[in-house]
Length: 192
Ligand code: GRF
Image 1 (tube, rainbow, N blue to C red):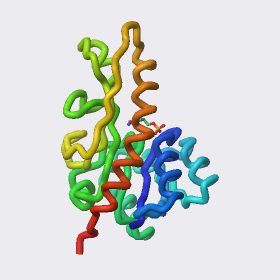
Image 2: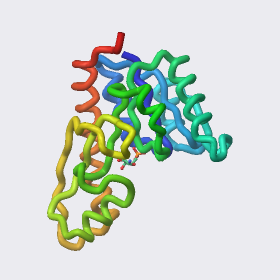
Image 3: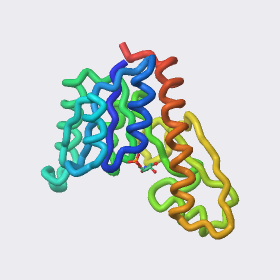
């Protein structure tokens, strides 16, 4: 099964997925694509011998549909079966998401359904929660609302800053995403 990983930044989750797919795995890491040319993850992917593409959303201005049409074309050209969003900081439109329904995963730094969207760690701290964590979910048109495939919890400790919590959660993201992708692909049947 050909896997594309979509990133916007450093790609630490991407790296963990690539490392896992370098072992015997139902998925083949076919492509890493970034919407930002400066994303550090691109270099890390290349160092692992994985093909990379840049699709800079800024060159499309406000034209989200054209960006997504082009993205879809690239994914088809690489014969991608499954997409993993890994710190991909673009919201994808309903048409694109529907086309990839059941074939696109995302990792989100909260215990969904709590704290969809941004600033999850600040929000968990402000709410006085005892637990935080991360979720891998299927992507549906509504933001961070798809079926949850796996979660990991971490404690929130007295005196934690949002950065402390982000660091603690990220460690769990690195373990959770490869585990969930592996299981997902083991049961995945491509649409006929
Ligand atoms: C992760 O916390 C992910 O959950 C969030 O963005 C961050 C990406 O980090 N959506 P990285 O690029 O994988 O290092």
